[in-house]
Image (cartoon, rainbow, N blue to C red; front, top):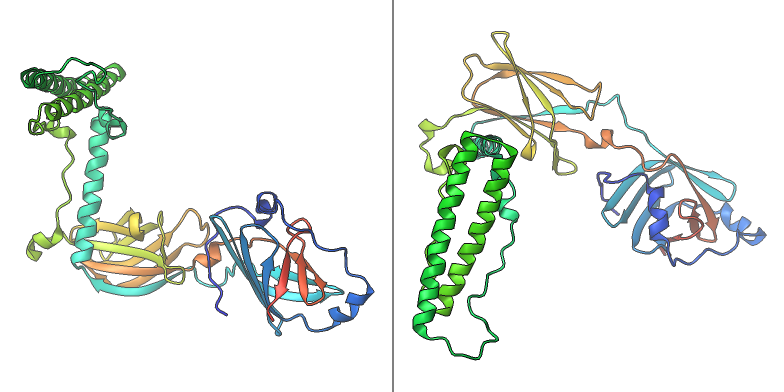
Length: 377
C-alpha cells in the first residue's frame, strides 16, 4: 500500500473531533478478559478507520516497529510516520519529529535561460506594472465588482402599444445619456489622478457605477427597438492608469529577450513550489542582490548581470535557522533549481496516540471514544 503524503493545512487532528463525530456510533465497553488473549497476538497490519463521519484514515503497523498514518477530513489531510509499541492491551504511536540534521535545501541543477523563463519574466513585469497602476490610480479598485442590472426601458405592464418610432427615439436618448455618462467618468478619473483625495476617488466610483447602468440601459433600449447593440467602449482612462498587457515571449526575437537569472525552489516529493524564499545572488565581483520567490516558486533577476553569479543563498521566514548557501558554476542567463524538503517543516499531527486492542481491531483515543480502526482482512 502506498500512503499519500500531504502538507498540513489546519491545526492538530484532535480539533476535528467535535465536527466529525456527530452521530458516530460509540465503541463497546472496554475489553474484558476475553480480549486479553487476543491482545497477545501480533497487531502488525493494515487498518482502516470506520465509525467517524466524513473522515477517511488508514494506519499501517509494520512488524519492524514503524508505522505510517494518514487521515483526510474536508480540506484537512495529515500524514505521520514513526515508531509504535505495545503497552498491555494498547498500541502506542509516537510520530517522528523533523530531522534537522538533513539539509533543507539541495541543488537540482542549472538550465539555460529559455522561452518559459522569458515568459515568466514578462508576466512578473506585467504584474509589477499592474501593481504600480493600482497605486497611482486607487479609484480603479472595485470596478469589476459592480453588479449591473439592466434598466427596463418599457413598462411591461402597459397595455398601450409602443410604436417602433418611439422605441427608436428611446434608444437614441439612452445612447446619448450613456455617452455623456461615459465622458463624465473619464473626466473625473483624470481629475482624481491630478488631485487625488478620498472624495475624488469616491466620485469616480459613483461615476463609473452610473456609466455601467447607462450602458446597460442603452443596450436594453437598442434591443427593444430591434437595433444593433450599440458599440460603447469603456471610458478612456489616463495613460498612467492603463496597465500594459503581458507580451507573448514567442513573438519576441530571441536576440531581443531580456534574459536574466532565475531561481526556482520546489518540493519535488509533494509536487509543490515554495514562495517567500529569500534568494541572495552573490556575484564574482563580490556584489550581492536580493530577490524573493513568488508565483511558481520563482525568483527572477532580470537582465544579464555584468558579473556572473557564483553562489546562491536561500532562507525562508518559515524555516528559521535553516539558511543554506551553495557555490555554483559561474552563471548568466540561467535558470537555477533547488529543492526544499517540505516534510522537515511539518509539525507532527499528534504527540502520541493510544489505541486499545479490541479483538482484531484498534480503538483510537483521539475521537472521544468513537471510531474504530478495522484490520484489513
